[in-house]
Image (cartoon, rainbow, N blue to C red):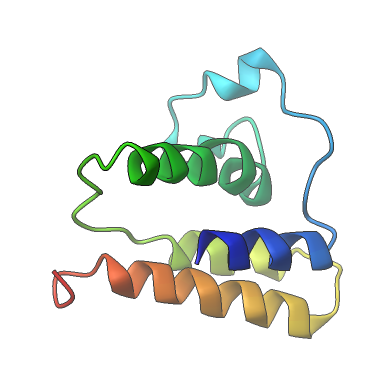
Length: 103
């Protein structure tokens, strides 16, 4: 699912070649929304963290609710709607995997 999200972000041209500043990475706000956009948060915080947890076979979060933030972010995107729809669908699937019903 993470690889699918990466591919979709790249297709939508929402994948950065350079990381955010150290200052941005130290944000304590949810989704680092005060210092980076949602795609940057996915790329530089969420995806690496989930990858580390999976590779180390550490406990995964019990619940995730990424979709509402993703929907707000998608409203501002200037790319083809099919790309944003695909990204939102994947994020919804990630949320569902970590929903109370799935656990």
